[in-house]
Image (cartoon, rainbow, N blue to C red; front, side):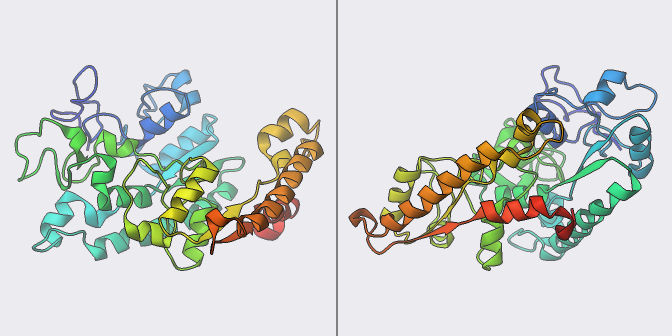
Length: 349
């Protein structure tokens, strides 16, 4: 099944359907553009793909940029040299417009049971991917968590610039005639997000959640820590249960001014994470690690010195009048990550 008919593809420059279920590009396209590879990711077809397409990536997701059985296509790609695979989990099925209409009741809410099925599937998929490396020797598999990101967009759709999170823009009983502005809708049709929804980033440098998110979940607070933005309206509940202003963590803001802003809003507990071992980052190991790509001592020494000064500075923050009554905790990610790097097998990597 392909979305190769109108009104799909109407946001493309050529105004025609490409097989994608959406008004334009989908998640796989957004990823490849973000990596600076190409703007659209072609569908994988054994008979029609050029060598350049295979080298820079193809997609075999149904309605994404093609359709094919997963296992056989993955084997075909592996045999042709592919070694890096990104596998996207299921989106929140209970929040799809079709599910809301039939299972959402009078208020057309997200269906808990359908979402639970998606969560269980994603958990099994994420766990299963870890074993695929042994079946496909030398290959790397990354799980892409679309469920969490899209759930946040659905729940806080106005914050992301949408006006409708329940109905699709087209191909539904409530939208027999396609809407004129698909970018105002989270979903383009009965089950597929709009191009704008796919473009929503989390600001995190990683394949999923980062350290702040893990800490918050471990404390039983919430699964994702939202980025602090002065220019964006934040709910009181978000401020009460924690926000983040770390570059690439969940946002980006000047440390001092952001801390003062949060303090003025009532924040009194701050966790400040130190710098990780810079000399052990892949780019530094390749450039400065020699033949064996060792961790670079000089870079690690800079990180250690910075962390030492940061710890001492945090102790003085609590006695400053501008932070009266506040508590600052230093989070040592350097030591934890160094132990993981030095003893990878002990952690199952």
